[in-house]
Image (cartoon, rainbow over all chains, first blue to last red; front, side):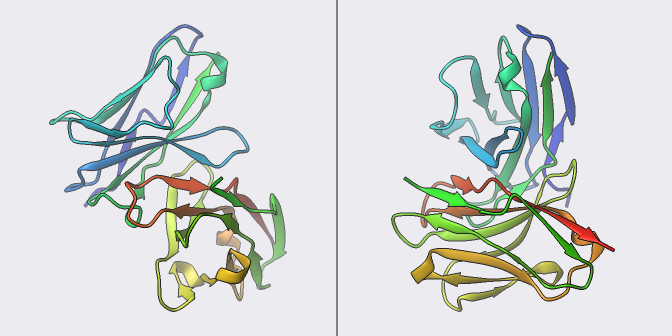
Length: 114
Length: 114
């Protein structure tokens, strides 16, 4: 059973471009969480999704950030018009349940904005 | 406000020595408690978790943690550190019955001297 997969692992964008980060949850998992890790910081929750639904986006910046988890395919975290402050590691976790107890993390996507 | 504090940013221990990493939390009620480990360039791996019951929790790789309600602490311990334990360690809390939002500390980086 493959773990949580994220791609790309490294992404470089210039200011003003768009970044798309993908997360494929573990097989059988229908709950996806996105976290952001800024340099020298812990992970900060961004958004929680189930298939085709955003359940909690309380940690998402109000502008430029969006997330989706379609019925088919991976979850996507989209950042429009990136700025240098968006440079961070973005982690995805998946869970089979609506709960904190069984989140499995992917390897992360490291975004660098030039 | 809910928060997790890991007072030690960086710890160095000799191989074979014992280890204790500190974690204190501020939360409205007794939360779920977790320790994760992150190797360089990798995602997070769950070491152990506490939900209820015995306050001394055993995890993988020889780690254990003790929940002390009176001190709002959940310190991670290992009796004899191996060079492969060098990594960053994160303490996290999650609300019971919540939709999965984990709150992380800023992490403690562990270096191991030969």
